[in-house]
Figure (cartoon, rainbow, N blue to C red):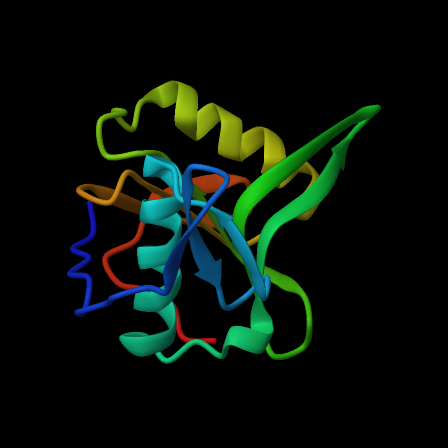
Length: 144
């Protein structure tokens, strides 16, 4: 497990159609603020503010193809050469990060082939380095 301490963050929110929406600065749009979205927005803010990852290298809810299936990964971060680098799967805080979540990310990674995979529910975060098909738990976030 890797420690993630979210920096102070007050996202822009508004009420629309009886639902709270949050402005996603990466997607540049208002999205419904679900418990999973709360975790996703805080992780994005952590990447930008704490790790200094450039927002221009991030994609949110990026569509990927797994054979005939279309799926969306929560956060995909590219390296400076424009290649997928870090895949992050977010779950709401009340959902445990289980082997099933890891299997989901591994399926997504069949299409992306990233060297780093992360799983988080906002309370607990696991980071893995994918080297030669072997997953090794990483102790610190990679530099881009």
